[in-house]
Image (cartoon, rainbow, N blue to C red; front, side):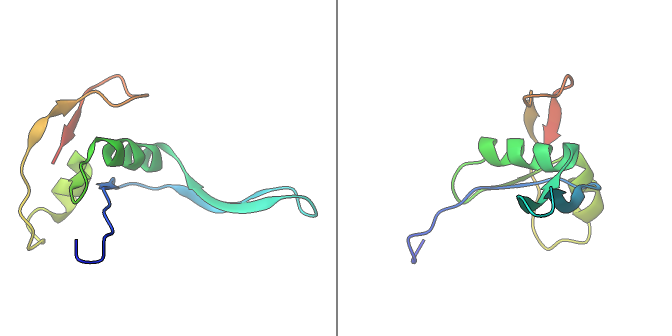
Length: 88
């Protein structure tokens, strides 16, 4: 793009765990984790620069409300998941 920044985005809908992890007085980090966070990361890895990929739940939640067009892609086997995921 014009600013020389390229990114790929993966989006998944669900309930992540977000909070401080660690031991007070030692190391504490704020993080987000959970299966939906992992799925979003896997989708991001599949995406090309400038592309946004989402899962079936995100597509269902935003499909008719979004001004963006969704296109179904082939199912992908995501690392850590047994069933190939529908990707848009």
